[in-house]
Structure formats: C-alpha cells, structure tokens
Length: 149
Image 1: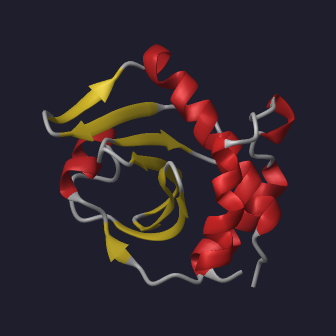
Image 2: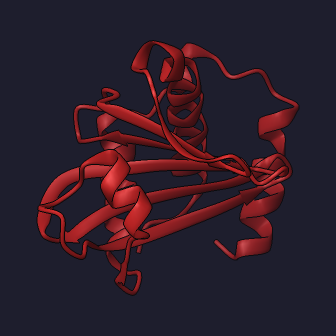
C-alpha cells in the first residue's frame, strides 16, 4: 500500500474509537513481521538499546516498518542481530515525545521507556500499559489494511 494511502487510512485512528476486538492478533503480528523483514536493517539507537536492556550491550541491528498518522508516527521494530523474538512498538507524538514498548510474540509488555525534551527514562509497566495497549490496537488496524508482500 503506498505510504500516502496508508497515512490516510490511519487518520481514522483519531476519529474511530479503538475497540478491544481490534487488538493485534497472532496472525496480524506475523503479517507485520513478514512485511518488516523486507526492510533494510539499521542499528537501533544506543539509548533505546540500553534503556530497554536489548541484546548484550553491543550494537543491535533491527528492521522497521513505519506508519505515519495524523496523531504521530508508529514504528514496528524487529531485531535481526542478535536474533531475538523481541519486538519494540514505538509511538512518537506530534510534540516529539517517543514511547517505546518492549514486547515479543506474546504481545505482553516487558519494559517501557519514554524519550522527550527532559531525556530518556524507564516508565513502570503499570503506568505504560494503557499506551502499550493503544499501540497494539493501532497496529491491529494497520495490519488489516496493509498488503503483505
């Protein structure tokens, strides 16, 4: 799906209430992984790697799939080196606040962090859970609308 069309489709995220049945399913997650595998690998930012405790402290190579919306940028990240089932769900709002949620194929929040003008910091899971669930709902919508290769 062309990026412009995907952006238009995702604008509905701010107008249509997210229902619980729109959570990211196992099938939808696999579809996103397949799409993301086609992306070019790049190293994750060291502050994200360190804060989320990803990898062994060295460079972490990942592939990303991005979905721009009227409310911000969603980024779906899978690790390719070191090989891992870890997934980072990221949402950057229009003010530049970036929330990163570490999860895996089980779609359970393991760790969360926020980066903003005040720096990078860990967010307790109980405080991050609502944002994480909103991110899963948004990706569930994206997965249903985007074509897999």
